[in-house]
Image (cartoon, rainbow over all chains, first blue to last red; front, side, top):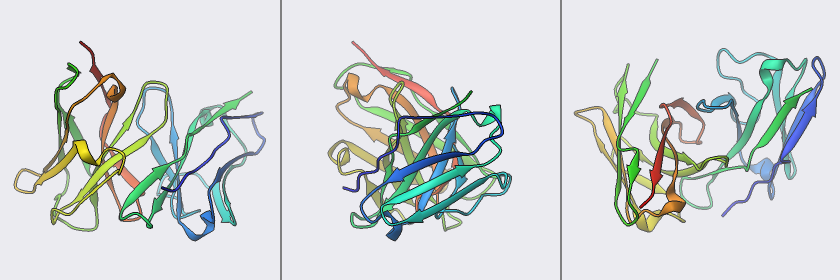
Length: 109
Length: 119
């Protein structure tokens, strides 16, 4: 099955830019989705298909996908962005198999 | 705006079968385009997709759980259900029901509740 890798943690100062990576073999051939999860809450979809934002998600959240790495970028980081972030892909080599990355804890300093 | 409400037990004994039901409100489960799935998250750990079902009844399971999982749908009640057999302590997790597109992007999440497997 398709394996995704993420750094366990990323630290960023308020107002700065956070970049969270999601690695996978030729991941650029797949659409990557990103979720934000705060403690005790269900995840929230923040980006889908590499870089599209659902309604209500600020433009500060953007994404890219190239080669073996997809990246979630959060600009002008706020305290409220502190959360766990998970990437996800559809592994269409195995019928309708959805894979999540291990997650990255974003800490706002 | 769809809402998903999960129901089921919070405590099971090893070897029992976990049965959870998710009721969809605010729209029809048969309207098409959406898949209805189950995702779990062990305490302090990451997300794991369990499986999904389309309104037609087509099912898709995580290969690592496939031998123990059955997902069904009742379109007349706007509900879908999860059965996970032969549970062990390793199945202790917060279980979420979810509505997602074919590409897997989960737009709708039910409330997560902890299911504990303990003797």
